[in-house]
Amino acid sequence: AVAGGKPLAFLLAAPPLLRWEDPRRSGGAAAAVATWYFLTAWAGYSTVALLALLAAVHLLLSVLHSILVPLETAEILKSVPLHSAQDAERRGREAALAYNTFAEWYTAILTGQDLRGAAQVMGALWAVWWLGSLLGGRHLIALGAAAALGVPGLYGKYRERADAAV
Picture (spheres, rainbow, N blue to C red):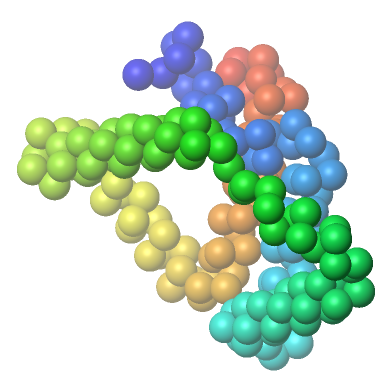
């Protein structure tokens, strides 16, 4: 069902990062995708090599930080819980609800109870296959990331014009 009868209203449900509510974080995500694309497309790195390099740099910085920070501060940081028990329980319930919702939708598609949804998924998979065969995996991922980082924010900004056009 489309919220308010507007065909593009689902874009408003995109995560805040994709809607550019915090331009610094969204810009950082866009810069990370652009950097990844540049390094894999033109500098010759593979994604696996970049992930290994990123993990090694993170580990090096963490070790250096633990050596350079006074012992008292390090002990204080170790004693702070990452999440409270209530927060962890709430997140667990949310994750279970999201999984159950997805499982119900997926089961309905697989069993033919939602033929329209199955047709939409098949159409989307065909479009991804077609674009992937034209562009290649790296270009398809970059195009998808650019769309994910651009379309919801633009829709939020130009909602009335987009709804009128569609």
